[in-house]
Image (tube, rainbow, N blue to C red; front, side, top):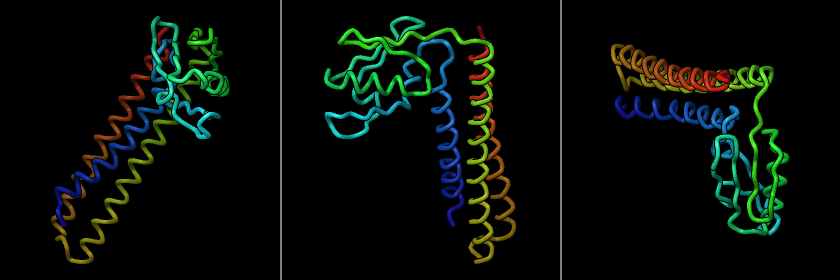
Length: 188
C-alpha cells in the first residue's frame, strides 16, 4: 500500500465534499447580485429537447450591485430561461425586454436572513457528514490492510493520525465557508 497516495486520495475525496458545500452556499442569495446565484439553475430548453445549465446557454453578469442580467446566446431560449428563473427557489422575478433578462435582487428581511442561515448550517453539516464518511472509508481500508498484512500496526497508527489531521483540516474548511457566508448574510 502506497501510503502517500492513500492520504492524497483521502484528502481529494474530502476536498470534493468541501467544494460541493462551497458551491451550494454560493447559490444562496445574500442581497447582493452575484452571477454565482444562478450557477445551480438548469433550463429545460424546448428547442434542443434537453436540460442544460443556465451558464452554458446564456451570459450572466452583475452590472450593478443589486441587479443581475442574463443574455441568452440563442434568442429562442429566452422564454425557457425566464420559466426556469421563475420556478427556481431564488424568489426573484425576471423582467425581459426581448434581448436581456433583468433580475433585480430585493433586500432580504431579517426573518429571511435567519432562515437562510439555517439552510447554510444544514449544508455545512451535510458536508461534514460526507467528510466523516470519507474518513470512515479510509479507516476501513487501513483496517483491511492491517488484516492482510499490507501494513504494520505502527504504520496503521501513523496513518490513522494522518487521516484524522486531513479530516480536521477539511472540516475546518467547511466551518470557514459557513462563517464567511453567515457573516455575508447577516451583514446589512
